[in-house]
Image 1: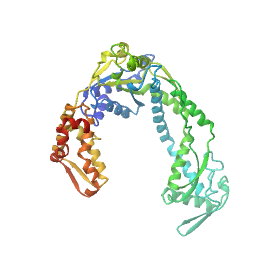
Image 2: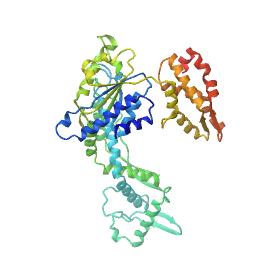
Image 3: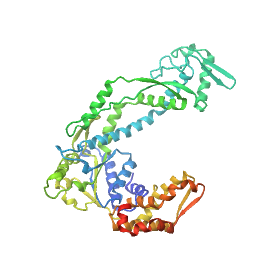
Image 4: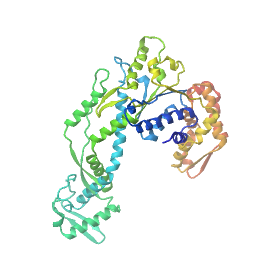
Length: 473
């Protein structure tokens, strides 16, 4: 995806912050360019990590999240304040990469699942036909068969015809089966594909999910070991099967999922997940300003600079052992963000600053920005509320002056209290529509228009009282 295309896609969800969008679009394109480079120099090209500086609620997190979705890349968001240096209570820094590869594994597995879906559907269909008509299997030996037949005899009514299934072995050679049985199976197959048998009840034998429910207490950094111990105990418990009576439509889903699991090459998926993590992984570190410390401190702040020291090898490039294999971090893109109200980026360790060469400042939002946020994005809040109330058969309409008034009041409250940016819109809109949401059933089948007077009536008293705004808005 070209940088202008990336920016255009981000514009569909995020208002303003053009500099930040351009920076991440260039970083994304440079990753693609590195993969096209031939020779040893390819390994020497490292990503240009980014620090986003700006108040809360202006789009820092949303930019990174949408970026990862655009390229279908492994993405993980972490808060720097939840991590501590080795020896203190808190999350282990390496868990960032472990979470990232879990995201990659999920992405790759879904992609591989799509590739085997058609084959899995065929296997599930054959299993269902055998359940519906025992003894009609098309294969003498089927490696993925479901061994349980619903009944020794089963009566089926198809128009004026009654079909009785006997207890013939499902492994019998189809060439030896009577022609009438093969014809019956084909007729059942047509009915199955047409959805005429979806409500029929069949008995399906499935594997019961087994999970090791335990909590392991231990020293800092035990997260990976704890997961491995749980997996080990889960694998020691023999997989149990259970017989369930289900409608055909549900049985088909379960049989297809089991067939997909058998067809998937989990070893190959793990290798692809490691490669995807190393080449396209994105780590978003929020609240990076919370681990700034310009001078040595004691007490609870003692580990701030220690977190930077522990993060440094991860950003510079190291190898982290995971259950899917070792993961190198040299080419993972790190995007950090912070408000930097009480500190500044220069308070970070010099070595840490050097690993984030690109700095982008995000601007505070104005009433004009709030108007655009309420109307332009694909997932605008006004559109969300309209869809919610549409489920109650209520046609919700916002006038232009209502949008402008909400935007103005949002900026006003942000200036008087804590400036939380666009997040204030959630609170104000919920306050405006609280009564309507409570009585939506009374307005079913009608149109409700939200205008400037309606907004002022619902918000005027709260917005005017600064003390009340602090507690309610």
